Image 1: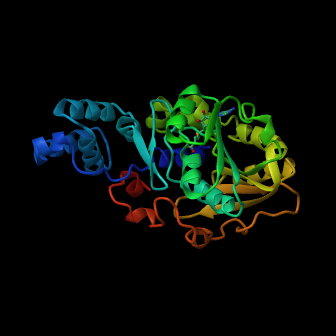
Image 2: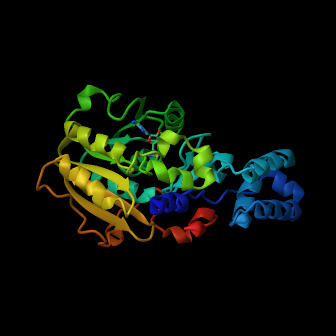
Image 3: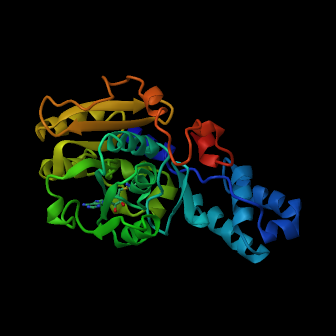
Length: 330
Ligand SMILES: C[S@@+](CC[C@H](N)C(=O)[O-])C[C@H]1O[C@@H](n2cnc3c(N)ncnc32)[C@H](O)[C@@H]1O
């Protein structure tokens, strides 16, 4: 249990990109206020105070606004919710209050989804439990001709996802598959899912940033963390196209349980693991014996394969992306 909480703790913030030119407040105030901001953040326990101070200074348009942003951060609001955005696969994703902050590790799910979607002409992709819509946005930005649908049960998440998934994407509110148009039945080529998977008892041990500022429905996966995944897998076959794939993020420790859920749902499953992102994804093919391409057994290195596929934000290692406090946070 504690390890799932630790997973969540490690992922408690995603990584905002480097801001652009400094704001008016920064220009007017010079270096001294930034140093004061660093001191305030450090006193509040922010480990990456310098990085966060730079982002907050750049985001503020006046000293008063900077003071307000820093006060919110010092009070414990996740940095991304204070800034109003997070970086994900090189994209700037809007994050609204209460909406789950897309985690760095989930870029692995997005990259796998992109790789599979690129194998299909004009693929139909569904981002189920989309939150801010970060995964769908990354797929839409990287795959030409994609028809993207996204669903979430939380109205705040749906509003946020609509900001991030403009254009031809369809974002609908409701329980799992329920709000999808019935005409999509049997036509989904790639179904990407980062559903809540924290076991209920482990939520209490999560960092306050997650517990207090992200909706419970975004975290709680039931007694063993796999309740929502069970419902996703149970419904998936009806929606997947022949040869389509279901991709579900899970934790390393929970992966065997997720694989079992896939097997019980009649899907051939494999586990993909990124050590770099500390990320685990289970992939399922729609037919028994129709194993997903790309990936081997648990622990196989898949990153070299993924690096062949250019992403919207480029394929630089995350550690090379500047101005990213959570990159340093791991
Ligand atoms: C862990 S968050 C992931 C959000 C997003 N996929 C991401 O990776 O940033 C889980 C999301 O699932 C949504 N959710 C939980 N139960 C749901 C359900 N039964 N139907 C649809 N969405 C659900 C939550 O509202 C939340 O936005």
